Image (tube, rainbow, N blue to C red; front, top):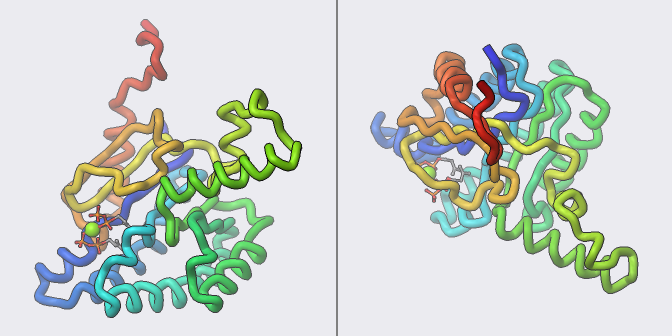
Length: 235
Ligand code: IPE
Ligand code: IPE
Ligand code: MG
């Protein structure tokens, strides 16, 4: 089986999963967060080199305060566990998104985790927190405009490669496969630039139920696609 080098995941459906069990939405988030650890390990064992997960979007601030607080608490704890897991699995962790919008303690834990894991040679694991693709592109454009203003760059030098170096995902190859769980067929402001040629896989399975078997199904689906990049199929 041809295993994609980079898989991006929109981990959706925690709330509905919990509700269907007669439990509060935040229970779904707690179970969903445990599942991230399992899938990281499974993906890496299967040969995936890069995994990028959507944990909290720039739009998720509009959820009720109680839910936002619960999600931030989970992220706080997750950063701590992840420090241990990263050491054990040799995982290199990076956070994409605007971390200046997060509480100081979470931001510090993120910086600590990135620093501690930066030389690891296992799975490259990206977590999107306070991430929105439009926000990422605007932040990149502002920085690029500053560099032009300061004379570090002339507009003619702004190639795709140059622009990408300003994105949060610089040095990370584009995803080969995007998975969205729980039935919604949209991108919700995720990696709009990076997904230009990515294969999409949508499943009705909610994130807390997304197991290794489901991951294999997604990769099998990817294997049956006919990727062309604008060309014609090779005979
Ligand atoms: C995904 O699950 C997790 C986050 C967005 C943080 P949801 O919370 O969106 O769950 P549903 O889609 O409401 O079921
Ligand atoms: C996308 O899911 C964001 C994350 C998974 C973190 P949402 O559940 O927030 O997306 P919408 O609001 O249904 O588009
Ligand atoms: Mg959702």
